[in-house]
Length: 419
Image (cartoon, rainbow, N blue to C red; front, side, top):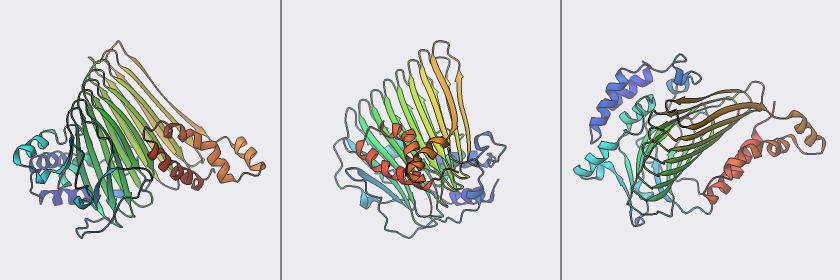
């Protein structure tokens, strides 16, 4: 066991609150969990040295931070600052049918209900998910009533100042027939370390529009997860956009817990320098007639490293499943590295499933052609490669978010040189 994990366990043992039963369970599991090494399959390409040497500390003093504004987006702001939920940035009046509350502020009956679903969607195999179980000092619970459509998206922003450590947790509960859009966003100033996990329970006939922007770069360490339970005829559309840092790791789990559930996942990440980004996506088809469409695209420059592990598991009773996984990668440098592992594990015999992965390089002849026509190298690079990512941006349901992220990605491209 590493010194960092021992310190985290010691800190968690000193916390006593309404989450104590779940924390005790997480600590019991952690006590018997080996610290991941390069011999641990799920962490084979992602060394944890940045975690072990991180200078980040818990900052208890209040710091005034606000999320970056997004033009033309009117969202309900749910803000964490250095791990603490800032209720002052939450609107005084919420739309009818929407509830946002801290678990510590609920009565004993509602706390018991929250505990019964806490950490039941996120699998116990996630080591840092267990760390989050142990160190999260509260949970923000978002609930949408049956049949209610919330037209404003909820934006969950985790803001970290220089050298801050945070562990945030949110539960999102969509009742039958409801609709909601949620944006997860981490903004960090440097030398930070955060674990941010959100669990989504999407009831029958409910619709979830989901985004996760993991745009922290530099010396930040970000490890988190988005985890989904989909029941009968539930639908979700998720978009992930990530940049690399000293260590960025995201785990996504989608469980088809009901029949005719429909999941779409589009992910794109762009890495430069010596950055690392690791995306592990697991889809569990446990019921019949489910549908999954997964598209992951990655561009890696300089000496950056990208990891993608995409697993689709078709259970024995999940007949009539339609599932497709497509991973496409682009290398801009001879020293860049991409490790991709798409997986299909099928135990049903009446399914239609496909998976594939490609790795390619920038067309140097096309790049040279544009440069001979007076186009600068950086602009030519953007022209050739932006379409590779832009196709997924065009599929984002929220136009304001698409227009906000597009120039950010263009600027990122301009910084990434073909070598």
